Length: 311
Figure (tube, rainbow, N blue to C red):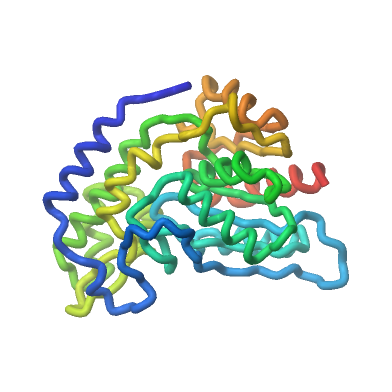
């Protein structure tokens, strides 16, 4: 198992706990709940994309799509629409806890993230197994769901992450830090926030992605809908994968989609993937970590070929 130094995560957490002063309870949108210690599953907000035809047969089980850190259900609308149309199945894009419009909780780790998804599957799909697809943090959550409740999962698709405990990329850690710094500036426009983020991320597309979390406070300044302190404290948990392949395995079909210019699925992790997911297939796409947005058409093709072939 690959374990890298995660000291940078600890230092980031300490800075947040000392400096963070703005409360998300001041946000004007009432749909954002206060971060609490409640251990019950989160009732996640979601988008539903219905099959293109009610008369044609489905080419896949229903699909649940899980975003990564600082993402939301909105990020995957394009591919969800494609899957619903091409596979003629229902697709759900979820807002995971502490993201998007879903409630906030102080605990943010894979056992609890998986518990939320399991609650959703049991409530909305009843006894029908689903394809669970996730990117990055969502990928590890999809793995955790498949390992702990294989009866609810017809196939598992992990996008650019592996079942290993490994440090998050420095860029990911810096994004949480950058959003906090921008928030404390109390900027009056998203355009100003976009310019301020350039110091931390030169790629305009990624800055636009980060700013999908922007909201307005009562005084009109730019803040962010995600609970930054909670996520900063949880970065070490997001980097972990707290499961043992000698105790848990998922015997169903599994697809791992790897960005070849990303470091999240190194070759050294492949044997461990096989221990957890013995029926896995690995597909490489020439992209960085943001596989879905960088190579949308190729990603959709790889996923659909996997699901149709397996069916």
